[in-house]
Length: 267
Image (cartoon, rainbow, N blue to C red; front, top):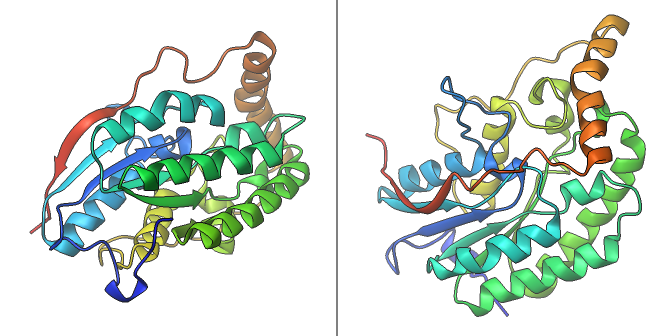
């Protein structure tokens, strides 16, 4: 069992350099936090920077997450390559895409999540479990998805307690449920939402967020009927078409950082 020493406050750079790998789906890849060139940043990139800033030491960082991935492919395709890098810290999030589909096997998600976290710990890295943020206020059929998410978060909390690992519960961050934290597709976080998640993760690791991060946004009004129709046409219909044809937004994509990149402390 991975034991967390809460007294130390955070990952201890005096013991060994931080080598952080993130695995997961679009949430962890960073979709919604696009740079001008079309590449994505996202909360995991921000966590790597936050760790470097907090410790004053370079952080080795890799991100194997790919948008659209269900939990089974995340584990099958990303877990062992992540561990082969020799990380000291592995963040794990998955099941969000499973949750959007009918017939979600919540018990299976819970079992596989715990198995993956135990594998990370057995490999000598610290597992960090994340619950994704809650998008359901803006989604069609959101109440059904919210009930699944609530159940999975309860299971995740129990897993973290059993294994003695850190847990960043973004689902229960009520502020993050506000429309202002989400991108136009209402399924992926906007840049400010990614920064808020990164702050939650750093707090779980024993650190504060950098002082220059903006973590709150002004509330925005409910969409008008015209805006709702536009949203359905631009985002919901393409999503349904992909489901019907068995395609994924991640088809043909590879991880953005499959090998170590060095993140330096700022000034």
